[in-house]
Structures are given as structure tokens and as C-alpha cells.
Image (tube, rainbow, N blue to C red; front, side):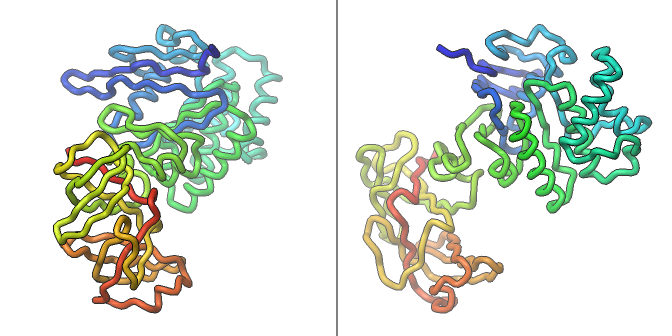
Length: 362
């Protein structure tokens, strides 16, 4: 059996009465870009800080190439770290900031100069060696911080919400640079964010954190198309959740009935359920269609159009079900239905068999 490159094994962290993480277990491959995604307080940064050596776990272990690193001090783990705040030394030039990790490792001057030049070129700041941090933009300062974290060729790079202080345009620009740098260097990256779009844009795989635990791990398309839990379905992408009752269950597929008498069938069911129990039907706005004609009973619901909003590349249609819940349908620009519907129209929403999901209500 091949030894995993990095294994976070059963990590638990308690701060007094507060459980920050509970049995976090994750294997990361060498060269992988893994993102920890979740709301504030979900345990993602705590896990990252334990990996970096800034905090000790209450229980569990972290293995790098099969060996525990918990007894190794943070400054000797040879792991790079980039924070939300750039943490550059304001009294040092760009070149001196990037050289700092090499100097504390007592590297020779010629080697330092070569590695600093290579790191600055990697982040496209060659020629900025003598610039002071205060004379640089936020995006440039974050590039310097990235160069400093990479200059000593760490096997693992940790990034804790490094772009959250930047505006949207600059954030997207730096995201592209981070992805390019990852592809060029092959460094293993563990990246923390609460921004789902950022996670989807950057990651090879994503670990969804919630209340100190990992709810699901997968690629962006896997998490989007096959969410394992209600939380993942709600956190990744836009969704509507319609309340109903389970009418039948066969081979992890279910039928649901709704308050107006509507019934849908053959919906993939997540977690165990019982006939007669409450459940929710999840529909994504871009995976459902509007039709003037009723579709198959298993995948259609009558709705009344409440509002249409033009957003340039798409029109969002707000519709209300017969029992009073609302959902959104997204029609791409130029869709023929856009010019055929008006507020107050009674239509049907329809979907493909695997485009909907059912979740048992807690």
C-alpha cells in the first residue's frame, strides 16, 4: 500500500468547552490543490494552524510522507504559510523580505540572491527587489508574501484566506496567478476560504467544513452535482428547497408529495428516510426548465411567475409553487422562453431525473 503524501488523521481540537474540530480525517496527494471551504467558525483555519504547528491538537496526528510532524516545531516543519494579512516587514525591501527565510536558514549569499530572483520572477515581480512594501499595492504585497513562502521550496504551502482583503477584480487576478504558480511549481497547497466561487476556481478537490467536521470531500463538479448532505447542497451553488412528505422509497430514490397535491417521483434520496416523514426537494435554478405544457409527473411542478430580472447574460425568474414556496429559474440570454412569459402566468417547472435531490429533514 502506498504511503499517503499528507494525512490529517482524526484531528480533534478543544478550546475549553468549545470543540473547534472533531475527527477531521483527510488524505492529500503530492502536488494537489486542496481547499478547506466553509463558514466562519467551521474549523477550517484551526485545522490549517495545527498543520502549520501554531496550535497543538487535543487528539489525532498529522503525517507527512508517513511520519508524524506534531513533535516538530513550526519553524522546522519546512511548510510555507501565506496569511490574509501580508505580514511583510515594513522596514525591509521586497528582496530582503523574500530573503528572510533563507537567512534564518543560514544559506550562502550567492544562493540567497539566486533563489530570491527566481521567486520574484515566479510571482512576476522581478525588478522590484529594492521597492519598499509601503510603496506597493495590496495585490503586489500579497505576491511578495507568496514569493517569501515559496522561496525555500517547501513541500507544502498553506494559505489562510489570502485574498479576502482584496477587491473582486484584483482577487480574480491573483487567483489566476496562484493557479499558474501551482501548475508551474507542483507544490502541494492547502487553501482556506469561505468563498465558494474562489474554491471552485482554484481547487483540485474541496473539503467542506461545517461545525468542526468535514461534511464531504470531492471535486467542484462532484460536490455540485452530487451533494451528500443538505449543508453541502446549500453551500455549493444556488438552490431552492421545497418542503414535502416522503411517499415511497426504492433503491435510494424517493417520491414526495406537496401541500397542493403535487407529487414527484424517482428523486435521489440522501440519508435514510421513512415513508410519511418530512423531506425537502432541492432544485438548482440552472438545472430546471419552464414549460407551458405539463411534463412527466415524476419531474414537474406547477408554478406561478412572480418576477423576472434581467442580469445581462441571464434572466432570473422567480416563481411560486401552489403551496406558497418560491424557487428561481435561470434562463440564459436569448432563451426563447424569456419573451414568452409574464408576471402572473401559470407554467410548469421540469427537470431531468438526476437534476433534483431529496434530503430528509432533521
